[in-house]
Amino acid sequence: MASERITRDQAVAPFFVGVDVGGTNIKIGIVDDRGNTLAHTAIPTDEALGAEAAMQRSHDAIASLLSELALTLEDVAAVGLGSPGSMDIPKGLILEPPNMPSWRYFPLRDTLSKLCGKPVGFANDANAAAYGEYWIGSGRQFNSMVMFTL
Image 1 (cartoon, rainbow, N blue to C red):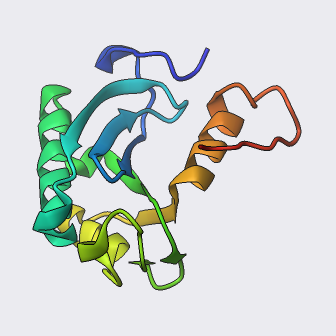
Image 2 (spheres, rainbow, N blue to C red; image 1 turned 90 degrees about the horizontal axis):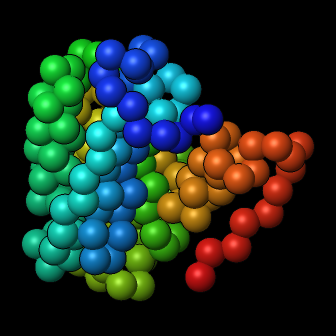
């Protein structure tokens, strides 16, 4: 079954990084091509320090996780980034997240992409969660699904 935690030796390349930005914590995970988790961590969002500082700390946490797995950013195909609130997806901007006022109109996608040197897919956090459930979670047995987040 996908989404189980596996060792580096069991993993199937390429590798992907997922970053889930929340008002309290930023969750980061490394998965293989089948969606199996190799490693994960969480860091405080520290909203008041701003989005740029949070993206730098996210990059540092990604590098640390990769190092623990004897991987580098060269081994990563892409990064997925989910964030709360309103967004301008084509421009990669987080617009007006209600619980993160210092992050308004910030180029979240491009900042993380520049730090990691990788393409970054950008989605609303609830949409990203729904896709994850559809791909490797409880929705994988269905042709379509609906997910509600609270």
